Image (tube, rainbow, N blue to C red; front, side, top):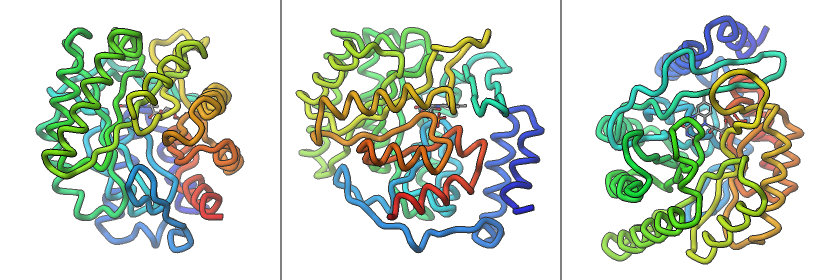
Length: 336
Ligand SMILES: Cc1cc2nc3c(=O)[nH]c(=O)nc-3n(C[C@H](O)[C@H](O)[C@H](O)COP(=O)(O)O)c2cc1C
């Protein structure tokens, strides 16, 4: 049995939230012992780099938001071969998140339902972690930002602006999360007036930073798979008008039949995520970058997304179920 399979077998037998923590902590220990490349096979040398968003990505395969919520593991994941990691979602203040159990994993269906609710250590501690770990990381670092649970939507933009200011020196790009289903009201930020105000303010901030500090921080917006095509077109067109740099398609979906709170990810999300990618690409052409996320479980899924003109790929559930095998397959595909 390969080490990857052994690790997956152990983690499958633990409760999901503990399993995630255990797997990442074990990976970090193996990294510290300098055994990552010995125990996990890697094709890193063959991958080809790509310039997008004004950044050099070592390859197209990244880690989606939420796996490394507190910026403790991104350097380890980079060492395994990921070309970029999106840490967070980080909120200004620390948050406990929703009551446990809040991650449910269905192994046969290769599906996860989570209702975490932005549990994270908050901006101050997360920044310290980034500063500590970034020198050991060669990839691109995305910082996913979200509004605090207690912040009303009318003032949400202030929270996002604070976060951008706070992380501007360490983030390579910002992912604006307005699509988690687990913070009450958050998804309303994609609606008309809120969205208009939020994107205006964020774009102004991007320009202000660019002029004041001569650093350009690309902004990508993470979108829900539950938007209707009508709303999706509105969101995307308005964003393009305002020169948003890119989109992440998609976050988790509330459209499922499990009698559980939270959003679904994994295999069950694949079709919806592909439809969103196809639709948005048909609207925007090559005017902005698309990062595809959702239901990427196999080598074939990666081939499909690239053929559908995703610029970059993010893994989450697929990595939970298949580990390094999927990552190495994806790297192989994306380098051809
Ligand atoms: C346990 C869990 C926690 C997540 N936390 C976040 C998060 O904090 N921020 C975010 O933008 N997305 C979060 N996501 C969504 C993922 O980034 C990803 O977009 C989604 O799971 C779809 O991809 P997948 O089908 O490959 O898992 C989370 C997903 C899971 C399963």
